[in-house]
Image (tube, rainbow, N blue to C red; front, side):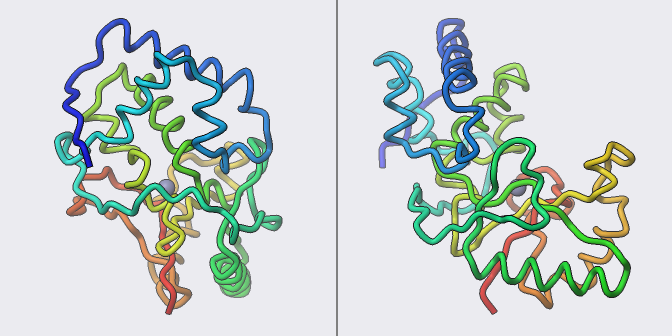
Length: 227
Ligand SMILES: [Zn+2]
């Protein structure tokens, strides 16, 4: 694979990135299926110049920016994904997961309800490579185009567990956070319960404090492994 050398965005590139985000906002952001958007649909929305710019991010080596995670490949096949109907925050479109992960999530929620009277909601499940790129662009813009800072907070397409069904990531959220009563997932009783019990259901915390992957602490981000 060609590794692109990109260290800093030029003013022109920053404008191109913003115009891509505006296009997505206008055309696709309200689609309930936006998290499954294919590269074909995404690139069809773009001009040649935007296309060339977006393509650079499919060949960047994020290790140059301190991210030391795995390469999972640009998996955009979502034939085996099912829409999560129970316990998913769908205010911003639907969430999708492989069926065995939905079953494990359901089973874990039932146990949590039985033991502490709480349940988790899904805040993000499977994301296509193109959707991952959009999220990366949104974060890059929010982080004032700082590539190093962004790479520690969101993976580039192909490097995210959200796009790797064999190691499917789930971002969890609690009812209190959804209702604005709390904001720190790591201080919730649900998180404490997960630390003790999640492994028994096949869920593992991917990015604990000071993890070897160079990713910031993400208490909400758990991946599932087939037992
Ligand atoms: Zn995540």
